[in-house]
View (cartoon, rainbow, N blue to C red):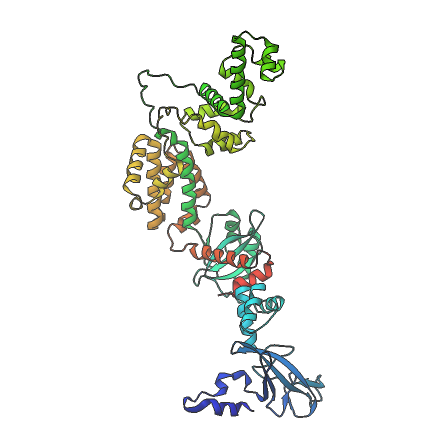
Length: 546
C-alpha cells in the first residue's frame, strides 16, 4: 500500500491527504502493516536512485540492501516501528573517495539514527522538560519507550542557542551547593530569557564573557563586589545598575539593627507599688507541702502513717518495744523507728525516696521565673534544658502543678514591642498598616527621637526608590550621616562604595526582577534532577527549556 493510496482513502470531501498527516513518510512506500504490541510498518524507499553524500552525484547501481528499524511517533497511544528496507549504491564518480553509500530519506532517516525526526523531537521535548528518570517514565506512558541515558544524550546533542548581542544584561548568582559553590546566571533583560550560565561567580569569569560578547550597554546586578569588578573590566562603557529590591532589603536589615538598639526606649514604666497586703507565698514551702500531700496519698505514705499510729497506741497502753513488735508482727528495729512521736511531714520525708531529683538544681530558677509571670510549662522546660537539665517534661509539669492554686503574681509592666514589629511599622507603607499599627508607630516615634529620625530617613529613601528620584540620593546620604544612627551610617557607607550603580538603580527603569524569576526557575530544574546534574547538563536545560 503506497502513501498515495492511503491519501485517496483519507482525502474524501475534506481533501485531507496522507501527505499532510504523515509528511515524513512521503518518500517511502508502505508495503505492509501489522499490530504486535504496537504498530509495525514495513516500507521501502520510493526513489529509484540515490545521491552520494560526498560528491552529490546520483547513482542507480545497487550494491546491496539491508533493513533499518526506526522508532516513530506514537499512533493511537501505542508505539510505532518502521521496518525500512534501504539500498547501498555504487558511487559512479571515479574522483569520489566513497566507493559505496547508503541512501537516506529526507525527513525520515539520517546516518546512524534509530528514531524518526518526529519521535526525536517529541523525546527531546520530554527530556528538556523532565530530564532522565521522570522523562523516561512519561515517554513510556506516551508510547515512546526510551531509557534515561538516551533522553539525556538527546539533550546534550542539541546546539547551544547563540546569545547574539545582549544590550541589557542581568547578572545574579545561584547555588550549586548552598554555602559551598556558586555559579552565575546571565539574563537578556529585554526578553527575560537566560543567555548563559557561568561555572562560578568570580570577576574574571564575568569579564571574559563580556569581552567575548561585546555590545552590552546596561548591566543589572546585585551589589556583589566581584560582579562590579567583572562588569567594569569586561564592559567599561556599560552602565551598571544596582537592583532596587536589594537596596531596600539592605536598608530593612540596618533598620532592624537600629530598632533593636532603641527598643528599650519603648518599655512601659513600672507600676507604682501597691499597699502592703498579704505576703507573697513562699514557693519553696508550697512545693514541699505539695510533695508531702502527694506522699500521704501514696500507698507507702498511707502504710507509714498507719504503722506510726498503731505503735503510738501500744506505747500509750504501756507496752514496751518487744511487746509492741510481737503484737504487730514487726521486727523490733521497725517498731523502734516509729516509737518516738513525730510530725506527719517528718514521717513522710523518710517514706519518700532519698534519691535527689534531676530537677532539684533548677527549682530556684523555676521559682524565680514563676514569680516573674512565666507560668507555662513547655517554655520553662526549654529554658532549663538550655541550662543543662536532662530530665523530661513530666517532672517540670508535676512541680509546677504545685503553684496552680496559689494566687497569681502581680502583673509586671508589659514588654516593649518586638524588634520585628518596630521594623515592620517603619518600613511599611502607611496605607498598608491598620489603625492599631499606625497608633503604635506614632507612640514609638513620640517616645524615642532616634526611632523618629530613623522612620523619617526610611520614608525619604522609600520615596526616592519608588519615584526613581536618584538625583536626591546625595542629599539623603548627607542627612543620614548627620544623624545619630550608627546602623544607618553603615548602610550609607556601603552605598558610597557603589554610588554610581546605586544612583542608576534609583533612576533607570531596569531592575533584577526577571533575573530573580529565572533563578527560581533554575532551582526548580535542579530539584527535578535531585541536585545531581552536572554543570553542562544543567546549562543545557536552563538555556533550552522555554
